[in-house]
Image 1 (cartoon, one colour):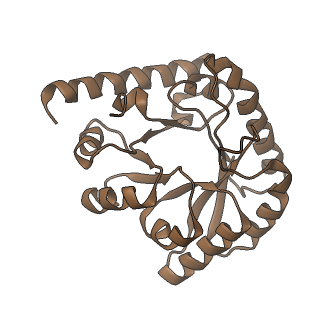
Image 2 (tube, rainbow, N blue to C red):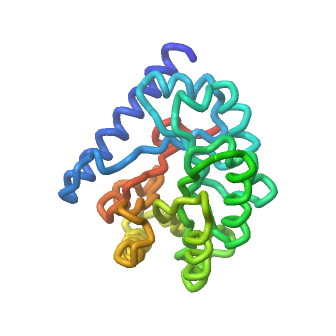
Image 3 (cartoon, rainbow, N blue to C red):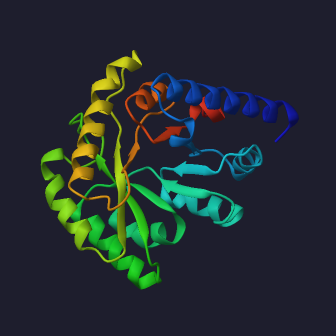
Length: 236
């Protein structure tokens, strides 16, 4: 990566960090309570390596196949890798081997398959978040809230899966404040599940908010924001 591109990446990253901190403090929260997951899909290992050198520690990928080559080249130990895109059950084995976190658990079949693959691969624990389709959009994955109890029961019966939180991708709005009700609904759902003990001793992560609306998500309680374009620039 040339110096000009590296400087632009550094500037965007610093801008996002300031915006995260400001949004957290505006909502009387500690900035340390919000993890920044840099969405690196479509970006080459060279760019991700530069981001690592700037201090980014968490990267999100949408597709197992694309992520695999990057993770092999860059190494598992250099960062924490998050799968944020839809996961097909036939790619569960590779996902278990590659990713530190899976944000997109959305079916009983997938939960059972991931648990089986953890046992096969000798992985003691896999942290997962359940993706909820709050907007009811057919073009987006995620479980319908009405089907959540069955999935929760399945995850609780799994030996190797550890439920750490919830994720959502609300409908896109030109005005990001219009996404606020969806973020609030996910927080309230998380709070209910926490009271029921579904996250054990943990508070329950909220993975919500992207480049155009992460500040609103933080104000509504996000603990993980998934930011791509605002850090890496527009994808070619």
